[in-house]
Image 1 (cartoon, rainbow, N blue to C red):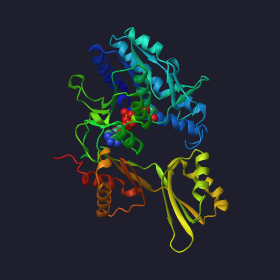
Image 2: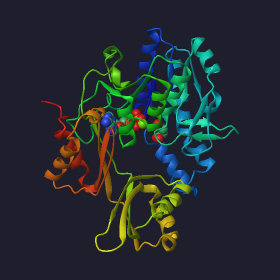
Image 3: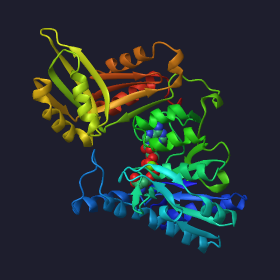
Image 4: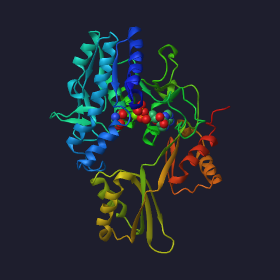
Length: 413
Ligand code: ADP
Ligand code: ASP
Ligand code: MG
């Protein structure tokens, strides 16, 4: 059972979480609980590290001391939930990442889990104790605390579930499942009873923050059954059908062409104008960015009509945009382009669905719906199961709603 920040935001909510855990324990289940920091806490801790001179999170790795600070929010909630469970007469104890240990690499601020050495944890649970685990944190091989990137408690939960061979990993949050799009933007969004790992992976990586992308990757590779559900349900109202199950595509009977719409405002667009149109140019630019760990997402290049030059546009993470521009300017003389510009006022909107593999006309519907609303498309990228467009940020909500309706995802009534 994993509980996110809103679900443990204050002592009353922690007491509510304790009741949900107790109800599962009464059913005879062995339980590991993973908790996030109280809502807003991690942001506050990050701001404190900024004030102490820690470099802004971006392409460069965070300082190891950044992790010491930001991991602390989860320690508080793990202890508080264990205390609350004990006060209800249950046998519980808290576990910090290093105590299990959850071994992570040393990419501070966005570390990856390398192993969960769950022998002691498993023995404690077998002994009848409820384990309350601080999410978001692990320990490096040389004994330093490492955090798993924002939203990383989801990944902690899936990793622990895999290590313990859990029947299921239940992610309790502030919505009652995965929706066809962010319910905060489109009230007509529908809850999906099931979604495939692949679609969920795309949804998460294209901006739906309901699950951290890595948690879905891990669930898919380790075959962990994941369920997303609300922590605001009463224990008596819970059934096997509550929430959304993330599972293999074969387990989904209802066939949809498009399952969801996602958006992200985390990207910036970089345009290079007047590039020489000959072999090796793209290679030089993207090697420079790749060597510096800048992730590039959408890319388009087109030949200019009037001369032997080309223009190129691509996107990078917003927080990497400044560094990316510096890197590009550093190769301007060598590559020989005329000008480079950056635009942060963009959003990426995507439609996702495994049904696209076998259906035509999906792109036509997308472009038609956006044209009807007067939304201009700046860049397009596609894969087998998604189409993404880059648009002006101000049109994000409008575009999401238009696409949601165009693919028949709106709730009826
Ligand atoms: P937690 O603190 O529990 O980890 P998050 O804020 O990380 O919760 O994730 C839940 C939020 O994800 C919801 O409040 C919702 O606004 C957002 N969200 C974005 N896209 C979706 C989607 N397709 N389905 C459900 N929630 C979504
Ligand atoms: N508390 C961390 C964050 O806010 C991890 C999490 O909530 O999953 O990013
Ligand atoms: Mg989250």
